Length: 192
Image (tube, rainbow, N blue to C red; front, side, top):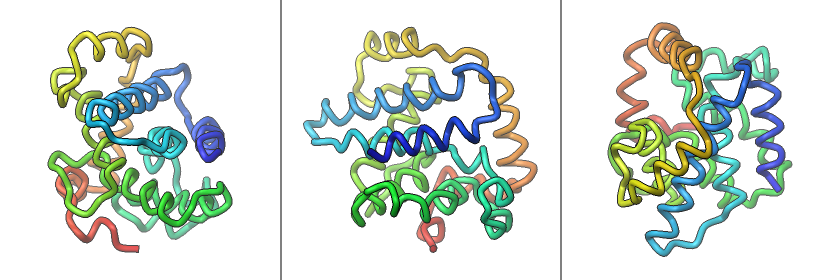
């Protein structure tokens, strides 16, 4: 199961104490699974949880940490997330189509608008990120009670150091020009 390897990778590289970042991943997984159920879509649970644990991975690693120096020249952390794991996923037992779906999850999870030609599971994760980031204000059809229960069961805890690092990495290190493709991705985000 790929999710086991994804979790190990996440735990190995997560520099933050406590469960704040892991709870973030878990909430997104629950919201995406509920959105799939609500839409009557079948869901590859292993792939979903793999993507949720790795969706912000590019914020946690640099080329030195994962032995890929070329990673350091990639200015967009969402692409770093994919580039850091794409060589590994072949050993995780994911089919070619599952690898493409994981790639879409990692590249498009922060987009504000729906994307054409991305895997349906990636679109579910994108919508789940909206629920998470808005603290349930944007629910994409999920009930207020359900969202409240997920936030209760997997509390936000103190995300301050994580959010400060996100701002430092995404704005200062990657550069403000990278915010546009992060939130409004176009074809150039998926170049390999």
